[in-house]
Amino acid sequence: MIVSEAIIQSGGSSGICAALLTLGIAIPHIIASNDQYLIEKYAKPTMSGDLIGSLAITEPNAGSDVAAITTSATRDGDRFLINGAKTYITSGYRADFVVVALKTSPTLGHKGISLVVVEKGTEGFTVTRKLEKLGWHCSDTAELSFSNVIVTSKNLIGEEGSGFSAIMANFATERLSMASQALASAKRCIDLTMTWVQNRKVFGTELSKMQLTRQKLAEMQRQYTVARTFLYDTAIRYVNGEKVIMEVAMAKNTDGICH
Image (tube, rainbow, N blue to C red; front, top):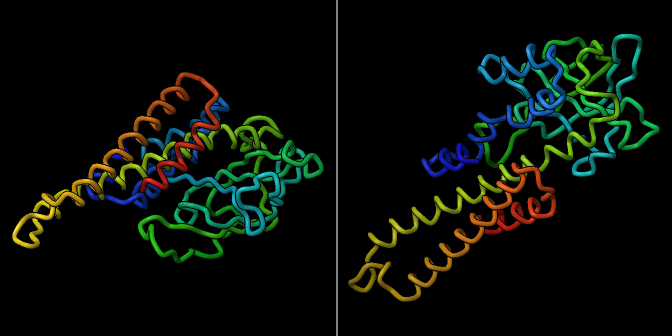
């Protein structure tokens, strides 16, 4: 959160945050699994900057409804056979590996969702399209395809069927990060506005000296200060182990409106 705020308040965009900090969504599941093989092979090289990771959850027909994903992984001895498609995947175009949400037991619904690492260059795994967006041009977004992709079972993160709970747990940190970026953008707007109204003259005086302008600026600062106080209080409670799912969602919504 602090890094994101510093980047944006220095003139960067949330797109830069998305491009540079994709590791924040790619490797937490690996680290939480405490699987030393995966940590050594993917997490540590990503943290050192030698690899780029990505997280693939969203599908053409399943967005926020994670339980509705259809990408599947059929176990065959000590390997998985993966088939399906993903879309709107941040850093998917340039990622060296992708943590893929898929169903290892489709009949179990959300309880059958698992997470598996798929490396770039694996036969059958292709980036089908780099998406063109209105913004965030410095952060690539891609569509991915998996056609009979064979992956070793050693690339399974955690236990089979543990993917849904792991994804939900990490959504809290993702939402806090997004809230922080929105709030930092709001602060950047306030700072730029302050500079402009202090230098802009109308009717022989600075715009900043007019009552309506001052009232607007005061209200902008009030909304920002209240939102930031709530965001950081929620973040501290989350780090301390409290269950703040509702508060995290409220912070993301509040800061998004503030932005």
